[in-house]
View 1 (cartoon, one colour):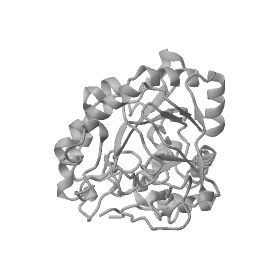
View 2: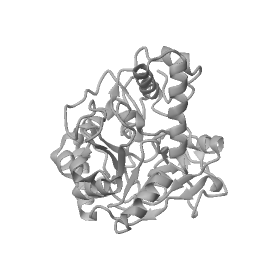
View 3: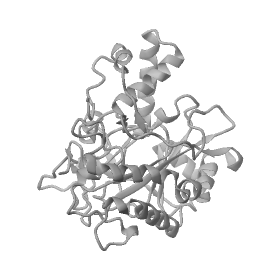
Length: 372
């Protein structure tokens, strides 16, 4: 059964649609729309929007056929798990509603049942195939290195083609209908041991309806993300940690929760900021800063379409950057005996990480998805 069951309130969130997050239905006053841009917009204007809003939502940056080809490859790989509706085409990515969605947990959905795995025994094949897809040539050698992506980042950033580098660590994430959504977070944890100038490209791999579990962005969330970083750094140093220890402490704190908060609804009320939403089409890309705060809605697509998207990161290789992440490609990671982390998107051993963070932020573990 799904982690959350929608209620039937009288007032939809926006455009007649009910948008659910982990802690309930978003109210109309909590919802706005992402600003659309096109790839042919003057680069100075795109740069201004990126700096001012913390993101640029680019319509049709990648040829649609290239995205759908990758989507077809992905679901062809996952088909042996039984996740797809019988008789449907792989590119459609339609979930088999006769199955229990908890047996097909979206990557980043957390563990269930106290078994330290992201699902019951039936999920094993699904998880293995979803992770294996990261190392398929169609993904890591073709899609992740799509020239349209690198070219746009090179131009908006001003780094130029020579210095624009795609980082190794990426996440090809699926979100099956009804399962837990991604909570509130920002991405600086990925590259904290370098300059905070990286670009994230979130690429929806297929069309995503308004209720289909797409990413949502906190209005002016990049300013709040920077405030979090500055506040934590100050408190860490005041507690006696060195600068390097402070960086590690923050990373481990985010590892332990993976989130700023589990519930976007409460988060919106706390900071009096709206969540910006949209429908996505294959070929769209959102470029956002490492401090831009985002989350996702629960996937309640009316056609049971599985949402797929990938997070790709780019750095200026002429300046210091977190070389522990290296470049796109690389060694496989283990699956079993580890706990899935919502933000690092890898299997991480989280033993004995609490003490230093409780020293800096008493009670900072309030928002654990799964405390086991």
